[in-house]
Length: 204
Image (tube, rainbow, N blue to C red; front, side):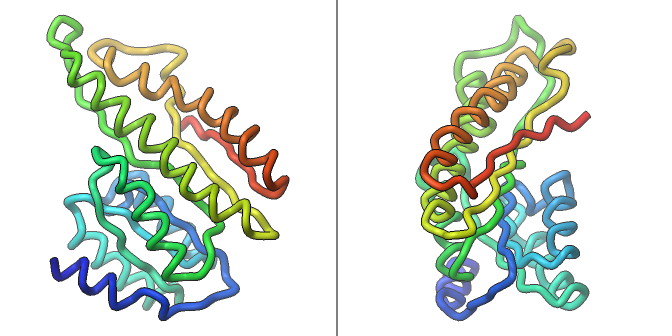
C-alpha cells in the first residue's frame, strides 16, 4: 500500500523532453533489469515494472538516479491481470508526460515434463508471455500514435522457438506467438503513425 501511495504522489510532477522507457519484468536482476539499466545509462528516464520484487526495483531506481542523472519510476502489478497492462503504461505516461519506448521483457519459464503439463499451465504461459505483451503494446501504442515522434516497441522472443529443447513444451508456443504478434502490431500501429516502430528481439 505504501508503494501505491508513493506512486500516486509522484503523478504529474515530472515533465521532460528526454526519452522515456518502460520495461516489463525489470524489478529483479534478470534480462529486463539489464535492459532498463542500459536505457537509463543512455539517457532515458525509465519505469521499472515489478510484481513481487518491488523493493529490489526501488533500490535500483534510486541508484540509477544518482549514477545516471535520470528519473527512475517503479510501477507494480501482476501480468496475470489484464488491467495491469493498461495501468502500468498509463502510470508511466502520466508521470513523465510522454512514452517513447516499451520493452516487453516479462516472461515465465519452468521446466516441466510433457506428460505433466496441464491446461492451466499452458494458459498461464500464454497470459504472461503473449497476452500481456500484446496488451502492454496496445496500451503503449495509444500514447505513441498520438505523439508526432511516435515511439518504439520491442518484444522479446526466444531464438529456441525454431529449435525447441525438452521439458518446455508449454513455454515455447507462448514465445512463438511473439514474432507474429510483432508483425501484426507493426501493421496496426504503423498504419496510424508511421513513426511508431515495432520489433522483435530473439535472445540466444
